Image 1: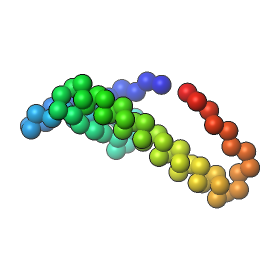
Image 2: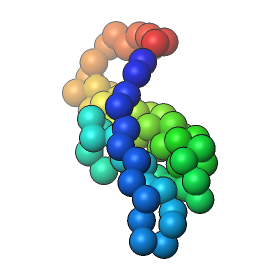
Image 3: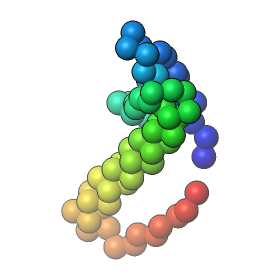
Amino acid sequence: MLFHVTLETGEDGWVVAECPALPGCLSQGKDEQEALANIKEAITAWLWAGDQKALRQMEANGSTTSVVVAI
């Protein structure tokens, strides 16, 4: 899966990385390499949290079939 991210250097010199496709998903690093590594981790966490929220809704609605799909 591919995501586009923006990189912007702040006044303090830190690089801020944001994934516009995932609202609120951003991170930062001391340099571009660290910011990219951190945003990858943030994207994974954002997607995992969304999946957990959906799973709780499915369970609350009494969904009987749940299948895990790896991408």
